[in-house]
Every structure is written in structure tokens, then in C-alpha cells.
Length: 197
Image (cartoon, rainbow, N blue to C red; front, side, top):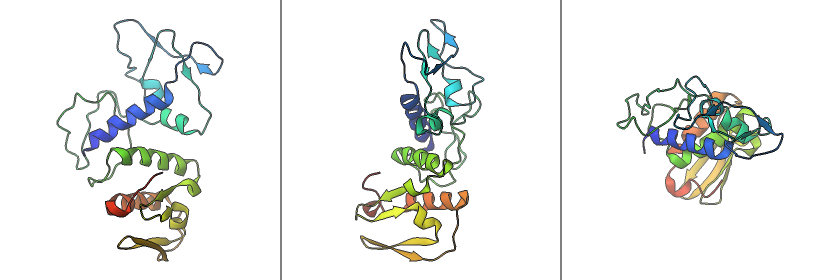
């Protein structure tokens, strides 16, 4: 699956999670309204919440600070009209299938698929809010791969369908360690990879 599908997923998730519409309440902030016939895009908006405008009489719900919905609403976007590039830097074939591009590094290998994008966003959110203990992957074998254990220097040893921890590295709480963990997870054999989470 191509990188552009990641971006489509990201925008759809952000819109679904963030654009709560209601007609009353004090948990709102004002936004630009769009006249009939105009697009719902604020070309100067740099984040999901500021790029996508609301229909007239709609309001956007303000989510709790540091919530996942708040994180999604503040995803940085590339300049309006930016093309979607594949993992290798090439332009994707259909440049008419996206409305915005999230400004997030995805690496230079074709590893990330649609469902991975959702898990990646959640993991990025948990990392950014220092909730490392909540970043975990449940493999089909029943093995639970906790990122907090990975940070302590342990690595998962896969032997057929069996997994175990082995201390191999020093403690590393850096973002680089987080990215390496994510890449490792993406190249895991599908038969032992993910059950749910």
C-alpha cells in the first residue's frame, strides 16, 4: 500500500475524531464560517483544526488538552496544495485524491500500511504525552510487546510463533529509539504480529 493512503487515513481519522458538531454549549471556539459554494479549506491553516473550516452554524468541540483528539486536531500539515510523495520520494500517481498532507516523517521504506497509520498516530500521541507504558502491541501468539520494556534495552526474540524478551541494549528513552521500535514492529512477520490494540 502506498504512502498516500496513509495520508488519506490520517485526514479521515482526524476529521472523524475532531470535528464534533453541536449547536449549543460553551465548550467551543469560534472558527471561520464558509459561505455556500465555497470550499471548506483555509489555505493558510497549518494544522488539521485550522485547515478545515466548518459549515455555517456548526461549532467545533474543544477537546481536553493532551487528549488523543486534541493531538489529532493539532497534527501539522504541509503547505496547502502540497503533493503526496511515496516513501521513496516519488510523487504518487493520483494527486487529486487528497485534501491535505500531514507533515510527519514516514521513513524511506515501504513499511507503513493503512492500519499501521492509525496505530502509529496513537503511539506518537502516547510518546509525546510521556505515556510510554501504554504503548504496547499484542501479537497473535499472545505475547505482549511493551515499549517501556524495549526502552530498558530488551529486544523481542522470535522463534517460530514464540516470542521472548532478551536484554541486548542499554536504556534508551530517545525518539530515535521509539522510531526504531516502530520500524521493527512494521517488519515483523504478519503471522506473529498483531492481534489487537
